[in-house]
Amino acid sequence: MLDGCVPWPAELAERYRQAGFWRGETLDDLLRRRAIERGDRPVASDATHRLSYAELDDAASRVATALSRAGIDPRDRVVVQLGNTVDFLTVFFGLQRAGAIPVLALPMHRRSEITHLCGLSGATGYVIPGHHPGFDYRGLAGDVRAALPELKVLIADELAAPSPSRNAEFPRTDPSDVALMLVSGGTTGLPKLIPRTHDDYVYNLRASAETCRLSGDDVYLAALPAAHNFALGCPGVLGTIDAGGAVVLTDIAAPDEAFETIQRERVSVTALVPPTARMWAEATAWSDEDLSSMRLLQVGGARLLPEHARLVTDAFGPVLQQVFGMAEGLLNFTEPGAPEEIVLHTQGRPLSPADEIRVVDENDDDVAPGDVGQLLTRGPYTPRGYYRAPEHNAASFTADGYYRTGDLVRVTRTGHLVVEGRVKDQINRGGDKIAAAEVEEHLVAHPAVADAAVVATPDELLGERSCAFVIPAPGVTPPDRAELAAFLSDRGVAAFKIPDRVEVVESFPVTTVGKTDKRALAERIGATA
Ligand code: J2J
Image 1 (cartoon, protein in one colour):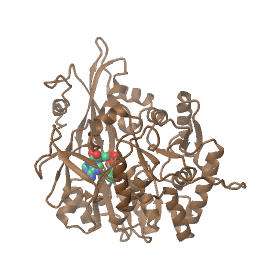
Image 2 (cartoon, protein in one colour; image 1 turned 120 degrees about the vertical axis):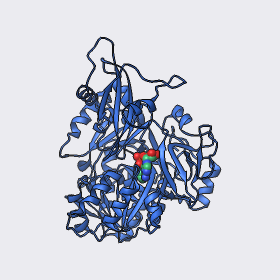
Image 3 (cartoon, protein in one colour; image 1 turned 180 degrees about the vertical axis):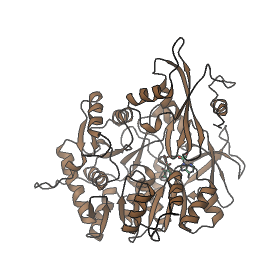
Image 4 (cartoon, helix red, strand yellow; image 1 turned 90 degrees about the vertical axis):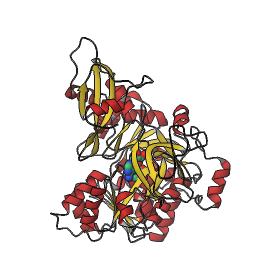
């Protein structure tokens, strides 16, 4: 495995191979094979483009050739920041063909996050869209290059443009090596990178596709960012391509637009976060589009309340699937057709028979069956460490390789997990994860802020929003929310991380061990941390 990664122990890797979880297949093999089998069948479309399997395969070769000409070598990390367009797939598979490693930034990341991701990954390239309505990615790339002058900025549609020269040939990548890096939701300072191997990710997407019973007849709508694990590989766009189906990509999850797409493209599967699922359910009341092609509506990323799950099944019929997943690996699904008490009230069951889960107390001792505790997990698609993060790994993984999810769960008698809360210092803003510490570090950089603590506040629509408690520096006018929002924005922080609310206080309550008591802070504004 690439330097800076923590491999699975050799005996275990062997066991995963022998059991058939790891198949020795790369993501490039997957596309090549399907392109031979499916040829002219449609694979991907967005508002302006449509590609067949053969065309995607050809575009991947063109992109790989262009990348190599631009000086991108095998195993180079390349930060990709593309929305849900066909270009996302051509660039993703082009990087695979060239043996380079996509680092999947989210479209809403800004200078702070992108500079960090490029630096942390040691990226040689950064791919942005040629033109994008509503945001100037070229301007952002210019700002990032000011900090990292060696970085090659690559324009997606230029990489994929037809070229008269012959496509280069590339050596095959080792399937046990890193195929891509996902961005972690994070709990500390800045986002971490999760290296996912070909073996692990092909298993992840294929097992997900099997659980969801995907076939070549399925049409998957990517309405969440394809750069996010859920829409990428659970089963997402990659699982759909592996199953021989078609993918429709859009950046607009608003129901009127999405419903029109569902009707036009006969969409059968999609994945949503709870606030969007609820919005869609409510919108069916006034929509007259034909949504009868939908057979599976996956909802995950944040807790779906049973009453909202009910809204979804009332609106769409028995198509709801709850998904409790994480970019770090472990995925849980409610089975299609499972009884209502499971679909409405649980977040699903682990995907793989080789997923190991433990539910533990503060001392890492197992709680009694059915009790709530922190979820620990390891398995064939849960990596053993973040990239280049030994210190963080020591805190986030147990000595025997379990990932500490930071989620509080209980396991039902049927083996389904129910998410009851979390112990990690994170805000889940409608599925968008905010590491409190990251925002706090930005806030204390403001000259009028002596200290800051960011907590979650309950929100009817998003589930949670963020509230920053700030202690002003002595003798200054305390900054208000507008001031701090402008300050964070100037520092290049993604908009979803900017606190929704700011409370100025004189001091923070402390716990018995002298740490800021975030629970007590949250209680002050009627929230529970
Ligand atoms: C409660 N909390 C949930 C759920 C995730 C599929 C689905 C989601 C993600 C994802 C993903 C939840 N109920 N149903 O990668 O493939 C919270 C937990 C978890 C964290 C992971 C996928 N589903 N969560 O959300 O890496 O706190 O992945 O640990 O963004 O989201 O966040 P992320």
